[in-house]
Length: 374
Image (cartoon, rainbow, N blue to C red; front, top):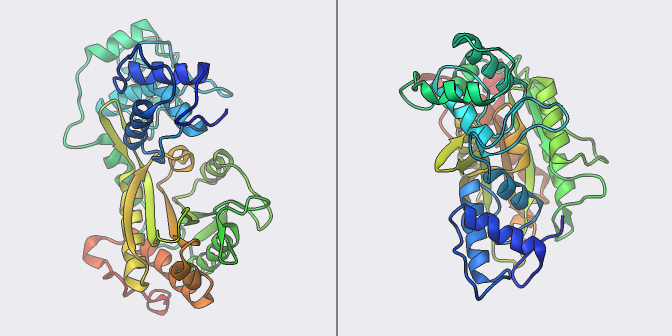
C-alpha cells in the first residue's frame, strides 16, 4: 500500500481516521478530514503501544496493525486457514484465554496457527464440545463462562521459560538461527563506505564460527547475495525448530548525531494487555550488557517491538542494531575487523549465559571462548 503521512488526504486517510476513532485514539471533528497533527499524534500513540516504529507515518506494518486492532473476541468465527490465517486482536484474546486455562496456543501473537487450533481443540474436548477447532458461538460461550485456572504470573512466559530450561545447560546441541539483515540488492543503511547488509553478513559469519566451536548448530537465513523478506526469514527459522534467532543490523539517522547500540525483543500492548517474549527480553538484555561492557558504543538500551520477524518466529528472537553507520565514530568502529570480532564474541557470550542457571552465570564482559570450549 501507499505510505500515508501528515498533509495527505483521501479515502485511505478517512479509513485511518475511522480506525483510530474506533480505538478511542482520535475524536471526531467536523472541521477536519485530512491527515493533520491530531492524526499524526494518534498514530504515534498507537505505534508506541503496539511495539512499532514510532514515526507518525502509516506504512504497511502500521496499516496492518490498525486493521488487526479493530477485531474483538466474538466479532467473527475463528479457525485455522492455511493460506490466509486469521490475524487480529480477537485471536490474541483467544490465545490469552486458552493460556489462562492451562492450554498452550503458543505465543500470544494474534495469529491463528496450527498450535492455536490444537489448543482450541483440546479445550473443546475438555468441556465436551465438538472438537472442530472452530471458535463459533457455542465454543465462545463456553470460553467466556469458564474462569481462569492458571495463576501466579503469565502462563505464556512460564511456558517459554520451561521450554528453555528443558534442555541441557550446555550450549552444545542447541540450534541458533542468525539473520543478517537486508542482502542482495537491498543494501540497507549506507554511509561512510559501509553497507548495512555487508556488515550484518560479516558479523553473522563471525558469530557462526564461534557458536560452532561451542557445539551449537548454527544456520543463516540468507546467503551473501539473497534477500528474503521477513516472513520468509521467520518461516525458515520456524521450520528448522531453532531454539533462538538473532537478527543483525546497523542503524541510521538523517543526521550524524544519533549513535550507539540497541537490542529489541518481541513485545506489544494489545487492548491493554501486554504480551512479550520473556526469554527474548532476557537474551536482548544479556546481549546489550555484553556489547556495552566490551565496546564504547553508547547504551541505547533494550526495547519491546512487534516487528514482523520478532512476532512471527515461534522461538525467542532478538534484533541487534550494532551502531549507526551514519555516525562517524560508530562507522569507524564497524569498519574495523577487530571490533567486529568483539561484537561477535559479545553475542556469543550472551547466548552462552542464557542457558546457564543463575548460580553458574558468568559476569558481564568476562566470557572468553577458551574457558568454555574445554
